[in-house]
Amino acid sequence: MAETATPSARWQQAWAQLATVLDPEVPALTLVDLGIVRELREDADGGFTVVLTPTYSGCPATELIETEVKTALAAYQPLRVEQRRTPAWTTDWIGPEAREKLRQYGIAPPSCLAPVVGANVQPLRLHESIPCPRCGSPKSERLSAFGSTACKALYRCTACREPFEYFKPI
Amino acid sequence: MKLSNTPAQRYVLRIADAALILSQRNAEWCGHGPILEEDLALTNLALDHLGQARALLTLAGKLDGLDEDQLAMLRLEHQFLNPVLFELPHGAHGERDFAFTVLRNLAASVWFGLLWQRLLHSSDAELAAIAEKSAKECRYHLQHATDWTLRLGDGTEVSKAKMQAALERLWPYVGELFEADAIDAEAQASGLGPSWDSLQADWRAQMESVLTAATLQIPKDRPNAHRGRHGQHSEHLGHLLSELQYLQRAYPGGTW
Image (cartoon, rainbow over all chains, first blue to last red; front, side, top):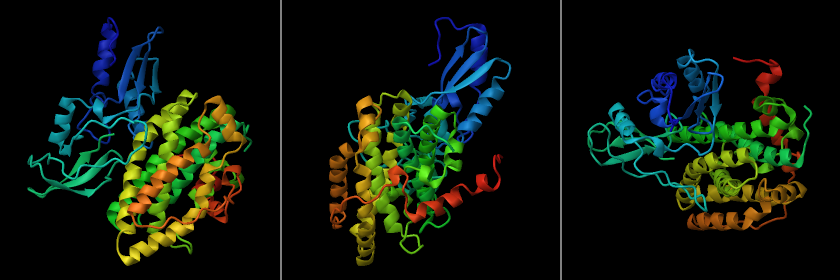
């Protein structure tokens, strides 16, 4: 993602710092876990550029995320933060470890790869049953296709009866 | 506010305003949804459209050094270029008619879906990138509107009658989504985006398939009589803007 041929020690320190920033809405994951950080560049003037990608067009956390990145990397001036819209962010960028962190936090991770935007925009069917992140039962029921944030739906486990959030594939 | 009003700027503003005004209308359900899940759903849809509008307004404003807020909050009614369909209130008599909301969202999400698809190939890299993101979000909108159309259209006698009545009210406004004019022709020629009339056949086919499955009768087509895309609006847009723009009008430059 952000590898250069030979990353400098300073770049590695900056990257380690950047990798600690948590997502404000899903604080179980870091911005790097979520794939929001697309690139960290060491510039010719000794400063750094961070390239971020928004998860949803209307994500209200976009500005907050930018502020938190600036705070974390305050020691690496001049610091620039850029937004990059393409390729569009997808839940496929959430890696296996991050998915497990999500599950342990109580949010069911995306159940499938996000369908590619093909020749036609088709309605996206949410699965009727998602494995419960708490008790592991494969049976659940959908309570609401939309949830507390744009990226989530609401389900309830039919075994342990606990409601849980589901990170929708996009 | 003075705008350059180049064909390219107007082309982008038409799409931006369609998203912004539809967002404002769907947001009117906040706190008023027939069930809690619909409150969540409609405000989520509104948020996606608002985000899309912000990106598009930012793009449209670049030419004149104007930002998204200035374009959204300080333009006058005749400077908004959305088709009239998007500004219509949910009910004919001031009530919120959920049937109309669902059918408008169906018409809109099929239309947006086709438009985003074509804009993926826009000669403007930023517009293509906005479309790439929006096309993904649009699928959830389409799912929501399709599910409700089927459930209510092919539902009880009451729900079916309400859906049919709402469809009759909506249909005279859909023609404006497919009118071609010089602005479209220029966008098509420059590769900025498709002429809207080229979306009509696919839109019609997708709508027919859902509406027929929902056992609804498609109303007779009428020639388009609406010119929202030229800045000539119904009496409803002024009221909508008085709410949308209230804060910046009352407290110019106010921030928090």
